Length: 509
Image (tube, rainbow, N blue to C red; front, side, top):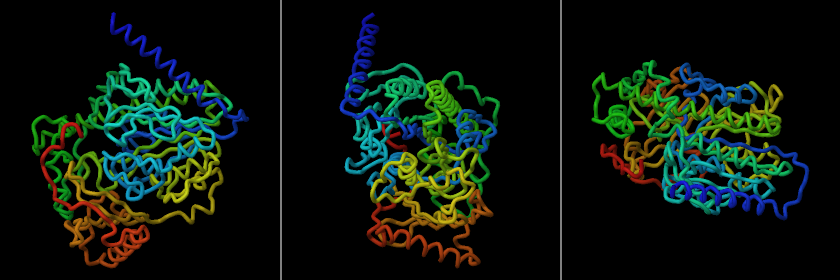
């Protein structure tokens, strides 16, 4: 009885706090006809494009996400500039590379002086909210600048029964599955918005981040699907040695597999069953995300807001699922850096697939451009709005980027990936592994012809016939870094201490 009374009081306080906050947002704001688009921005954690049917999955059917792509645009070549959650999320918000915004790992706060796109919309009269996984500052669940309503939690959150900090006013453990609960809260917030004021709602899903726990209705959805290790896990002859070593670590296919394997390392062929179960669970969490998109879309349609709402759906980074013998992310290989990105809304073409390479740093300038808002000064990304317009082809198509650089810094807490600096063009990829102290690179470089070898099986870095290509890409990468002020010692990074096999601290997983 006592727990029921306590929960009733907590819910009452939540309703009162929510109402008072909404009133304070609207006081003093001029009432004008609402002509600018609303925004729903949905970000998933560690979502591979291959886990969505609109990106080619034959097993994971995501009809609601597919419908967004059918009524809008799908980016075929979207990438993160650092394949790690916090750095990538900061880049998505600010339009800056990690070395510019300063969030280089998963434990660093986004600096308060870094402008971001929701804050810019708030400055121009939008009502703004963030609900869900923030994931910049592990132990801080307090509201961040730029949002009128902010609901998050400490750390990674839990798939079931997460404790939420409700706008800094109330802590509450809402029973239920994370994806469902955060969608409930989103619809609650939408129901409080004024019809004459534009709003921007950000939803941060935990799914499909490890550890993977589907909700009950999807826990056996893929029991009949056999999932072997990818062939590239065994095609490592031309790869640098650290990739073979990583297979036996926390981030390798012979390791714990986020606790799906209890005894490890295990390189026996029959141990693939643990890998299979892990992937099945990962896929199951994605099905709930698709349900969430369906609920949000239905709400917008029922309230006559769908046609005037810009919906952006994306992942923060990709994920390795056995490719090259690895799990997790951080590397510059294709499964690690590719992200799903879908957009639909006013002025955006339907059923269009964009081929150009777009980056996480392009998100902020693109959303502001689509909303008719002032740009953030000094961003490194560029708006992809011209690529999405209803005209069959714009002049911008021919002026889009053809090359960009990737950065990742070695982490002592997760010593399974070296320092990485690399360049990706429309055809080629070249990856360096700097030692960190100015001495020669610690590991063999990698070079791939993506047009002929999209799975990155044959490393051409030491092939004499591709020496000119390598030299050209090295020069291009050096020029890109130099333009960023990252030439020589200016590109600071930790010392690469090598691949290690110890497990990361339990609280950091």
